[in-house]
Length: 114
Length: 115
Image (cartoon, rainbow over all chains, first blue to last red; front, side, top):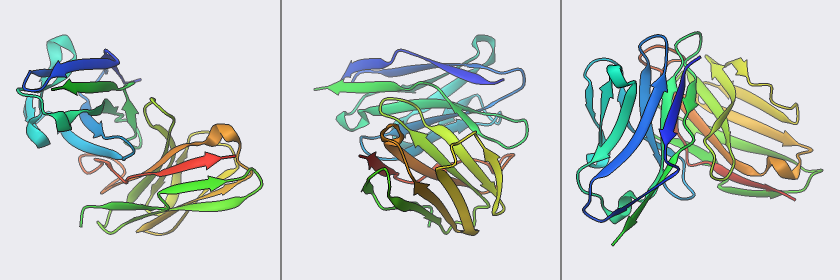
C-alpha cells in the first residue's frame, strides 16, 4: 500500500523566511505525488503534482517541490513566506492499482508571523 | 470553468431529518468523489463515481446514500445521522478515474452539524 508521512503537524516561520514542509512517501512503484493547500473553512486547492516528468515541480503561489527517489521525499518549499500562505498543507499520493484514489498525509499547519 | 461547486455551504440538521448535499461540475469530468473531513484531520474518501456508476464505497454507513443523476451532478442524501457525522463534506472531480487524467479538484465543501 502507498502512504505519505508529513513531518511536523505545525511549522512556524516569519514573513519573508524560507518555507519547508516535509513529506516522505512509501511506494513500491513510481508514485503520483501531490501537495494540496486548505485555507480555513475552504476546500482543498491543488498546489502542484509530481508525475515523473521532472523532479523539480513548480506550482502556484511561488511554491515548488523536489522529488528525491533516494530519500523517498517530496518536500514543499517557498523562498519567502507571505502572511497569506498561512494554511493547512496536505501531501498526498495517488494509488495506482485500480481507481486512482488519494491517500493523504495528516497535514501540516503553516503559521506565518509578521 | 474549472470549478466544483457545492451547496449548501452550511447545514444544520437533527438526527431524524433527511437532507441532501449537492455537488456540480461543468468541466466534463467523468469521475466524482465524496470525502468526509473532521476537524484537524485529512479528508477521508467515502465514495467514488466513475462514468456515473458507483465504483468505490469505503464501507460507509447506509445513512449516507450517494447518487449521480448525470455526469455533472453528484448528490449525497443524508438520513438519521448521528452527531459524530458532523464534519466538512468535500466533493471532488477528475477528468478520468485513473491514469494521468485523474487529478482531483475539490469543491469548497459543506459544513454539516448534526444536533
